[in-house]
Length: 189
Image 1 (cartoon, helix red, strand yellow):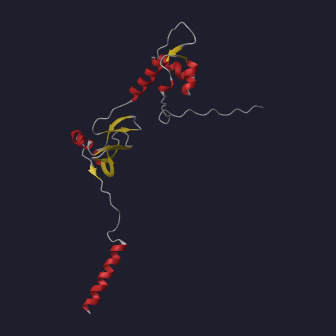
Image 2 (cartoon, one colour):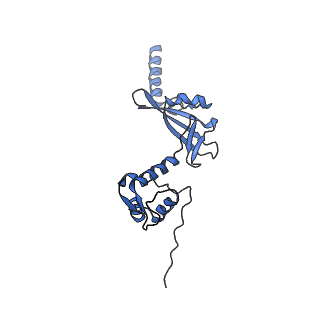
Image 3 (cartoon, rainbow, N blue to C red):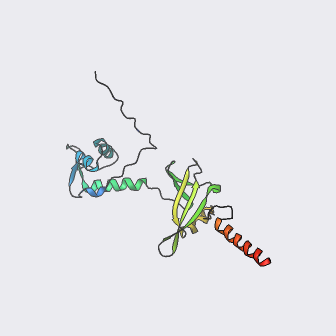
């Protein structure tokens, strides 16, 4: 009796990784079939068929197998990447849960200046906050130069001070103060 294995469930849209394809593997003056494109990009042939529906140019509709010029494929893949990009305005973060540019809640906005230099004149700045829509953590790596644009967005971050957490009395200071107390008690005698 044959055992049937469960087919793996498809991951949800939020957990699926968006594929990026390298358009430089195609020669511009060569024609490629859908099967060749799928093999070169290590994807399913159905993906390439969906691209045709989404605007991928083919050479001739009446001839099978469908052929695509490398130059057209290169342009299509670059346009696909460009459409997905979402530029950030000053005061915005990219929320990975919402998949769109979002602002942070004002009370959770923090600034951390690091010692790392970006170029010759500017230090690295890390902005942290929480999404105003879903509440997830946001992080933006920037420079102190770009922080000048943030007051225009009506959000002023509070600077986080980098310091060691202690009760104010470290063991070294305690030892020094004990020696000083011992020296003072000797002098008084």
